[in-house]
Amino acid sequence: MATFLVTGSFGQVGSDLIPQLCKKYGKSSVIATDKYLPHADMPCEMQVVDVTDYKSILEISRERGVDCIIHLASILSALGEKNNDLAFSVNFTGTYNVLKVARELSMKMVIIPSTIGVFGADTPRENVPAITLTRPASIYGISKVFAEQISSYFSKKYGIDVRGLRLPGLISYSMPPSNGTTDYAVDMIIHAAKHKQYTCYLKENATLPMMYMPDAIKAILDIMSADRERLRYNLEYNVQAFSFSPKDLENELQKYLPDFRVSYVPDYRQEIAETWPRSLDISESIVDWNFNPSYDFSGMVRDMYEHLSMGDMGNE
Ligand code: SER
Image 1 (tube, rainbow, N blue to C red):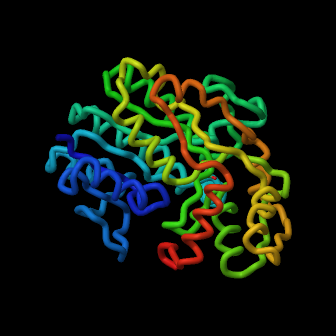
Image 2: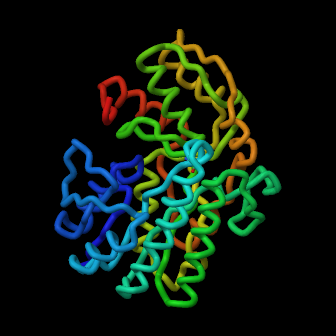
């Protein structure tokens, strides 16, 4: 039985992953950590761990016999542009610290999500393959190219089984939006359900790859249990379920709320979105570890709308 330590447990992905991890592997196998502990309950033990502090990760991992770190702590694209130093310490130093601890303690596995943010203005826009130019424009993207490269390096040089996948924009109702560029989508759905009006910081035609959170959680659990022999990459697996633009989402929401209106006032996040692809080639994720998302665009909007109408939104 493995012991998992999860960093950044109370962010958007962690809040939904931790309960599923506990369900699959047992509550006593999971240690949920973050820089601060939330007021909300978690189904497992919670500890304060600052990923920028190597010793803080090492000590708890050694003490508790951790053999897999799931490294979710990350500063997303929009906040990273506002605070380069914070992004550097969490995303670069934090990732390096996690891999060093895994090497020091000869861990079985490390999971590190990557992102569509690794792509840049000179990446093709449509059906982007896993291996392509990755010259991003944001510090978040640069930090995740670093994560991809250093993971391959640690995997080859030290034999650590580092796995991950490039997450697209994720839509979920458990947490409010958290400083990404794609978070307008969650924000727009919340505003549709509550305020009938929304001001979008991207242009109406800014199409981006996206996925509903239950499919992202399933994808993370699936790649964790995939046969290593079948995995040709470490973190470079593209995943997405659908692509849509802000206008597509506005139109879909108007099916439920005909009076809902969006105005478009693009800001610096539009510049980030313009360097990201509109769609990804996910074929290698399907072949290597059976990636198989179940929600389509309208199914995701329906489910989100239903949950938000019932008042399901963490911290709100
Ligand atoms: N959701 C991320 C962001 O917008 C991209 O992976 O920063």
